View 1 (cartoon, rainbow, N blue to C red):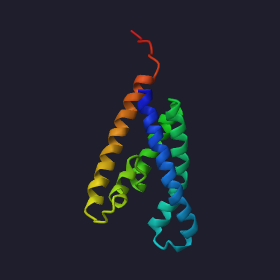
View 2: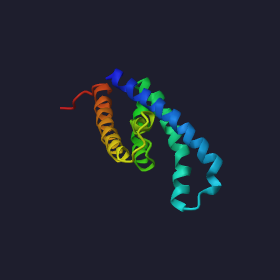
View 3: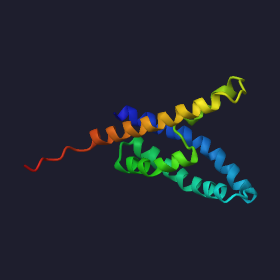
View 4: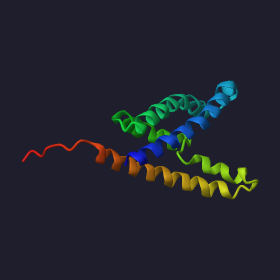
Length: 136
């Protein structure tokens, strides 16, 4: 399970790299957002970025705060499209295929992957916890 948690931490490091580029663009163009929902999304990206950093560090060390951080950021990840496997949506462009037919398919794969990650994180959290004595 510790290897699995380190893989999740590595995926979070990739997420941090891609989020850094997005946050730079948001900070430079924040005044151009006119729709309230876009402004809310832009503002929420900054605390989620911090939570992803904390979660990546905590999961790599298999600490409780890493799990808690991931549980807190999970709904925000879905809302903001900050997905662990989100980088696979860039693969068609990297391969020179600019058709719009692949993005919806790959986005669905990313969402399924995020829910699988949640399930595996919960299982790992359960297995890493110290066994508690039964009160009989």
